[in-house]
Image (cartoon, one colour):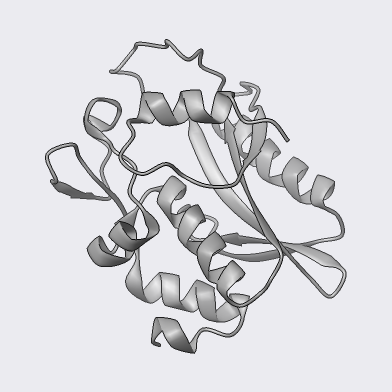
Length: 176
């Protein structure tokens, strides 16, 4: 499927599955697929165009691509980030990342979660309300993180070229 032939959220999911792998570019331009070694030290966010060009993205980039594609087909949607809170100056570059970005969209009076980057939960899930969707998604990540609370923040764009630490500070400073 070509990107210009996308007409539905289901098309977006299929297109993502065929075209975008879980991965990231490091600060030197190295491409990493399916592994997170040195992620906190070397990761830099990509623009939508860079993600489309390199065909890789973490949950951060994949959420932004799905947001971009949903906007393109005029479907109301919102990006969220749930994570273990880290202060802006958090400096443990050896620790695993504890964050997940996701997208909700609205259609026919229902709320849907389109999940692609989490390979264990890929799919489109239906909920009655935004609150129910967020609670179900966040509860999954709280359980995955051994019970650690997961503050969840809506965000509207991803600045390109920033580090994981800078993205964390960006999310910490978003206000709904």
